[in-house]
Structure formats: C-alpha cells, structure tokens
Amino acid sequence: MSGKLLLATSNEHKKKELKAILRYEGVEILTLEDIGKNLPPVIEDGESFAENAAKKARLTAAASGCVCLADDSGLQVEALKGQPGVYSARFAGEKANDEENNAKLLTMIQYFRGEQRKAEFVCVIAVSDPDGMVKTVRGVCPGHINDKPLGKNGFGYDPLFIPQGYSRTFAQLSETEKNVISHRAKALKEVYYLLKEFNLVKR
Image 1 (cartoon, one colour):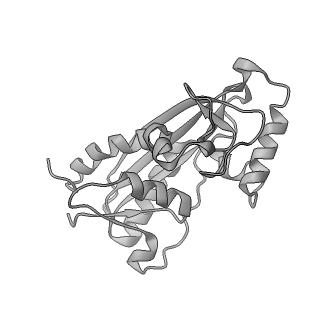
Image 2 (cartoon, helix red, strand yellow):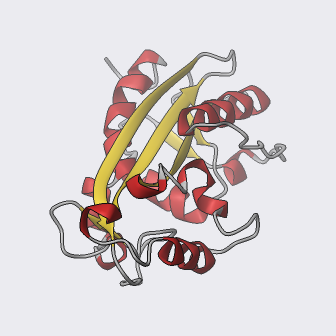
C-alpha cells in the first residue's frame, strides 16, 4: 500500500477534526481536493450510519484508486426514538443549516425535562480499499440536550449537546477538549487497528 489515506468528505468541519486526530507515522492524509479528481457525489440513502459510511468509503475508494476513510455521524435523542439520526444534517429540510436544524430539535423537545433530554452522538467510520474491502468502527458520546444553544465552537448540534460528566456544551469546549471525548474521537481511536489491516501503518 502507498501509505496514503483519502478522506471522503467535503465537510470542512469534519476534515479539520479528522486531520487533527488522524496522525500516524508514515500515513499521508489526503482530501478530495488533493487528488485532483472530480468524483461524483455519493448519495447517502442508507438506513443507518454504518450503511452510509461504508457506501461513501467503498464508492470513493473505487473511483479514486485510494484507500479511503468515510464517516457518517449524527445525534440521536432517546425520547424521539433516535431522531434526528441519519437525517441529522437535513433534519429541518434538504437545504437546512445548523441553526434551522437546532431550532427544529428544540421545538420538538421544548416540553421535555430531565431524562427525556438524554441523547447521544454516534459516529461510524468506514475504511475501504479500491477492491471493495470495507471495515467499520463505531464511537458513541452520551449526554443530553440543553434548553438553548451555548458556545461558538464546533458545528451541527454542538451548541445544544452537553456531554455526560460535563456542564458545558460541545460548542463551549476547546477543540482539544472535544477531540478527546467526542464520538468521532472515540471511533478514530479504533481506526488505527483498521489501518493496520490495510497495511497503512506498521504492525
């Protein structure tokens, strides 16, 4: 293997988080812009985070010829039976922004109190080679939903989500703090073992 790992995302926030955590000797992290290929977008139509992550990794790896890493992640609110789930990024509509998604969530849970506000961030990361071999790992960060947005860091539902054991939202934590406890950080800790299977890191 070449020692190059392609990130299958055009989300600037995700790229920043992934590159900040994925630091392995001998592994070059590439983005879609780096490879200079105009790859077709992958339609995320799976019913689970795992299905979407695996599809993105597999199709992007096949189209680019690179070992590829993709993630799918989102927020699950227990009292809403797991919503927004795989629709987290488009909860308030296909073109909804973070503020609109947050506003819809707060409206739906405005009368919820205590345990009813339990939630978790979930991240599934998939790694695929160009031949279609796909491996996945999963990370979960439990917590609850605050009654109003707080903080200016992060993205998505970060201003509403208070991780378990903390009194501040993800958006109030520093990048360094979040990258230790987040769902994505937990999944990425397991990625090392996947990269060993793809011969991208030394055994």
